[in-house]
Length: 161
Image (tube, rainbow, N blue to C red; front, side, top):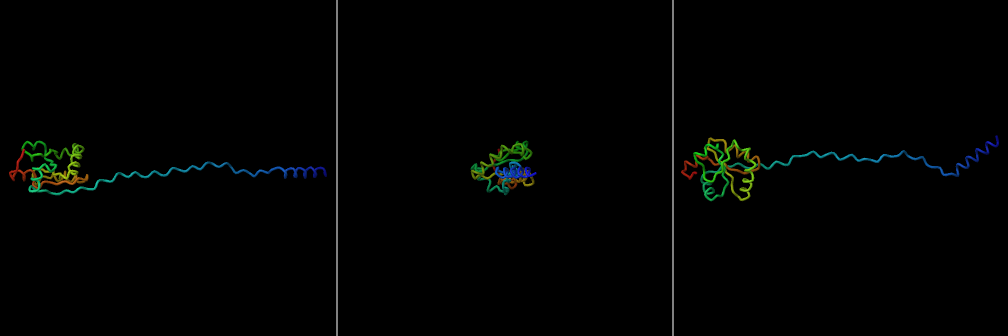
């Protein structure tokens, strides 16, 4: 038995001389950073609302004669055969959406040149010019409506085409 004890001590002594490795930690997984949450998309800001004003014949006539405005006749197309204000561009209210893309560059160009944009209808009771002016103002354009419409122009004896 003495031999066993001596052998055990020798074995222990040999273990103490060898390097003892520290237990290794379990392998770690690489840390993955989750992607940042997507920012909610916000629509582009709406254009600031434009202003709708009224313009009377005394202010309109000199501008029309000098070519210093952009003038839209918003009456139905068939009415043009009865006459219109010279230089007016036909843009019937029923065709607002269909022609808007073509008209907006004209309107912006007129505004940049300092020319007022004026709409007119048949007479003071016709709602079309006011309705279109409000639609344009909602898109950021400043526009005026001719007080009394084409009837006021014609009643004043001003030239027509």
